[in-house]
Length: 296
Image (cartoon, rainbow, N blue to C red; front, side, top):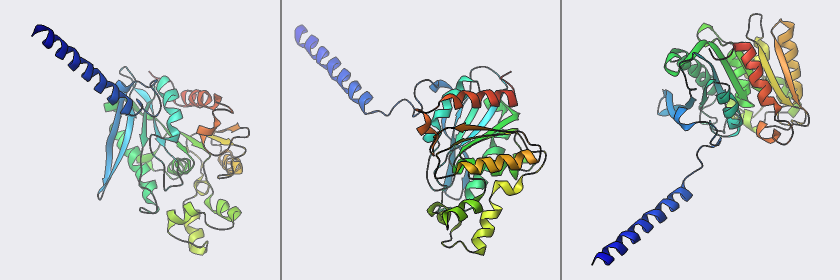
């Protein structure tokens, strides 16, 4: 009987081990951005607003220590109609975490279900939410950066150029940001599929032109805005490199500090730059640290 119980116990332990192996194999990766970011300091799917039945969520990373730490809001791309807070922009999570930034990666309402200006309003809401809760996350509300790629780059540049006191920030990083929507549409010969979904129009008529003009950051450049860092690839065919050159010229004409990091032969999407030049991440962190100051 003793041997039977011993055998049954061994069999049960083997079954449990097998089940655990299956569960581990079926589980998703620790995080889309890898194990280097400490999960203990990561807070997932925090609701920062609710619009109707739509819950707007973000992920937050908080460094060890009391801070106050510099803060960043990260806004993903995806043509204003796709993308997610954990995907392509995830290459920035580790560099910001290693530099002791409190960062928030946000989701926002997407077109065509939610046309313009829903996505822009969500970015503004996220800024206000973060400022109001800075102390909770050991962040410094007077040292805030906006970071966005592509459509997200457009949104953060517009938030900074058209910001008010409650949405003011101290630094902006735009990756391949379309900052002149009219010029982009003209070079395409008409509204892109993404632009059509965003503004709910098919034809590049006077009304569409007016809407695109109003949502273009380049048209709101004025003295007193925060410093900008633009990062763009020369082989980008989705958002032309010239967009960043023109935006930098507009900013510097108003004595606004603006640095442009060029990724030689870089196409659209920073995730595709890993085989070309990864130094942009360290250069971005160095610029942010110089602009905002290191963790205190």
